Image (cartoon, rainbow, N blue to C red):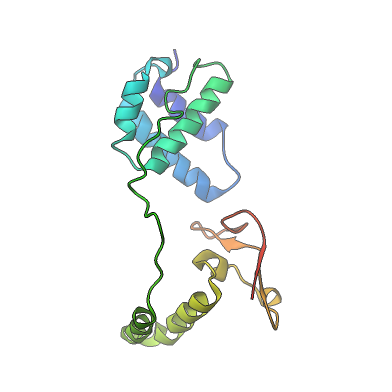
Length: 176
């Protein structure tokens, strides 16, 4: 007799993830699911209803709800996961990421002038990221011991909540 709303609340508490930033994302997705399906029983959500709702929310939200339902299935609350294998269109992602041109890069550096006191620091960060390929969180997680004469070791990343964790792919990396 578990409702969608009650399980969404329980799931956040009983199935926490290691990263605080992941927990925050999962909580927002579960809350959104709980608000929509609320008092409906967890095992009453038909696949067609799950898909119809999933098409109205960002793909990361429906993906999290699919994970939540998989946990419910694993403990016997539901027999199947209506959010699995929906083959939703990937309209939110670009097929290919196109970096800025050299002209755009130069204009970005010039644009730092409007930042007054922060301009030189921000300009240096943009240059460093552009020429090394390092992500923002990884740059903010660097320590002097990570920087060598020929390479940079990326072993941690600063998360949105300010904590330090593994880089985005979960593995340390070395950049020339």
